[in-house]
Each structure stands twice: as structure tokens, then as C-alpha cells.
Image (tube, rainbow, N blue to C red):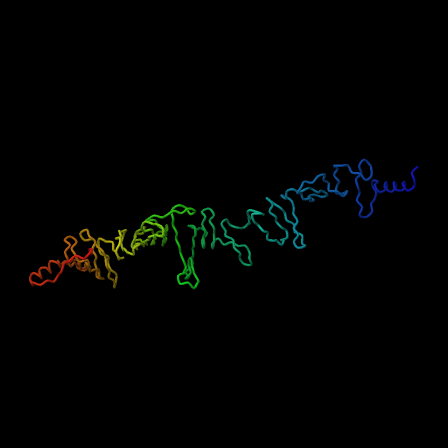
Length: 388
């Protein structure tokens, strides 16, 4: 016989767990297994209406979310789903499209992430042009201006003032003001520490440079103008190695080029050698070695016309020998190397630019005749020690 306290407890349990029983506040109905109160079958899914999640297993790393009414799913991919952004208490919905790019219905407050090797290898921003160089614009906004600064990633070139750089570093300007191009400045109290432009050259490679050779060009400066179809050299300066190189021994020369009217290529005009000799020529000439520096002229076949109020010194071929002439404004040319190129005798030779007639006086023979007639000696001959 069942005692009264035990019978009362059984009646209470039957009432609580009977189907259709109305529960009080904060009570959850529990599904029974085989009609036995308080038991759930292992592996069964407890529905949302019964206080469960409707899943028997949840994969590691999954996020639980409600995709449809009364259905909770384990989310392992955000493609096509809806994410929730808390914007300082304001709920913003972001529709995830494509490969996961969020489109916010209410603009959230973004926090700048730390992007580095440990958290990511690249950052892709929309609305930017390939080759843009980003900078902080007005208000610190990330900005681009390809017309002002541009990186050609294909040819590895940087353009300033151009989006089509023609070389490794290309500066372009349409300004007509004083500042056009580049300025290199130095500000210090040392007399010899001025602004520097340095051109370096080696053979070999950048990582393993080797010695340069005589004739190697170290640096070049070009002045080019557009002829309507292409850029052409108007003038240039070459800086070259001028002799055999050794440790602490780097002989150099400077070559100046200009382009003749009607020509497309520049020609060497002036050369300063490693010994200080200066040549003025229409082509390459051979410098003398040793001795004191001098001004050397390459010979021409005719005298150049002088401009108004000018006179000059020119070298001209005379019977196969280059001779020096003084040329005045009227194109009168007088030989200042006083010897005959054929006989070696002392002469006076001059050409009139107006009459195109030349006058030659055999000075050595003239003096000899005067000496013979007068019985006096006006000339002396000797050989300089070591030659002239």
C-alpha cells in the first residue's frame, strides 16, 4: 500500500508532465521519451519551441544564427547571409554579397585595423586606379591624384606631374613660373657641403660592382626638344673615364655636344681632358700627353663667319697641316703660327675677307736679304733646350 506522501508526489509529477498542461511563468515544456517523465533520448534534437536549438551537433568554429523562422543553423560561411553591426548602440544591417563585401544600410563607425604580416598580406580598396600613390588628403582622407604622382607598376617607373612616366623617375611640369622641375638644397654651416648631384657607374652588377675602363661613360645630361614627331637631342654633356683606372686613380674628361642646324644628332664641340687640356672641335681629336694644359683647336676647311662686334681664333688646314689664324669681324684671317707648312720657313700670311685675296711674305728670306745688303744681323737662330 502506497503511503500518502509518496502518492501525493506522484500525482504532482503526473500533472506537471502531462500533455497539454499549461505551465506557469518561466517554465519550459520538456519532451518525454517513451512517456517516462524527465527523460530525453540521446541524439534527439530539441526544437526551438521546446527550448532547444533544433540541432544534434554543432561543428567547431561555427556561428549559430536564425536564417528562417524558428530555425537555427550552424553558419560556417558568410556568403549570402546577413551580418549585424553594432554602431554605438545603433543596429546596422550589412548584406554580404559576392566574396563577402559588406554593404551597410546604416554607415557604422569603423575602427582602423592593424594590417601586417601577422594579420594579412594585402589590402584592397575600391574606387582606386591601378598605379595610384595614396596620400592623406583633406581631413586625413585617403586620396589619389594620378596627374600629380603615379606609379607604373609594369615598367617600374615613378611619375611626378605625369601618369605616363617615360623613365625610372619622370618629372613633368606645365608651369611657367620660376620653379619647374627639381630642387636639391643643402642647409648647413660647412663651406664645402653644398647640394649634390652624383652619378655613379661600375661594370658588373649593383650587388657586385667591378672596375670601369677608359672610355666608359659615367654620367650624361641631355637637353631634348620635341620636333613635332619625336624628342631629339639639342645638346648634351658626357662625363667619361679618360685613362686606365686603378685604386685611388679615376681620370676623367668632360665632353660638350651641340646639334647643328638641320641635323638630328649632336656633335662633340668642346672637350676637357684629365690633364686640363681644352679642345674646341667639330669632332674627336687626340690630346697631347704631358706638359702644361692648353687650349687646342680642331682644324676646319674654311673660316667661320664672325658675328657683329666679334673676332676669334680658328684652326685651318694648310697644305695638310693645322695652322692657327686670327679672324676679325670682317673675316680677315691672319696666320699666327709664323711658318710655312711646306718649307718650315718663317712667313707672314693673311687673307682678306672682302677681296678673298691672300697675301704671303717670306719673312725669313726677306730678313736674310736685308742682312746681306746692310751687312747687319737682324735674326738669330738657335735650338731651345729640350725642344719647343
